[in-house]
Length: 150
Image 1 (cartoon, rainbow, N blue to C red):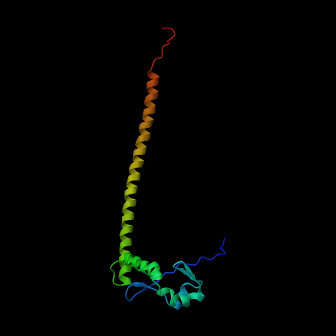
Image 2: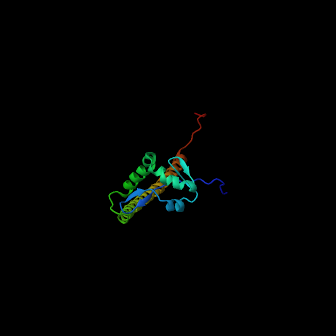
Image 3: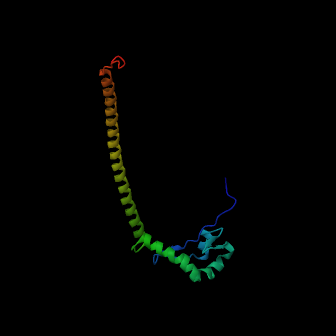
């Protein structure tokens, strides 16, 4: 079922590759990335208000504090001390390879534990069956006397 109401996306600054930080979009980028408008700092900006957004809203302290500074902090945390985006991308790929390697190691360990569990389960079933057989044999060897006659 399709929705009648379209939710506007939250504004996201772009990456400036020259100094590897997030910067505000220009008018053309806004129109291309958000053709229906966007929400920034709790305010809805339609395509008709992009010029006002660019001219006044982007220059406010509220925008810098709520949108641009957190985006830059997150960007720096994710890309660390990389000097360019290619290096940051390569570092993330290396990190993901290491995580994937760890996942395979953990899967291997879990498979080993599962195999040991299956072996123990089989031994338990064998012992349980032997115990049942022993109980049946021991009951057959008991001689019952008529206690009333005694």
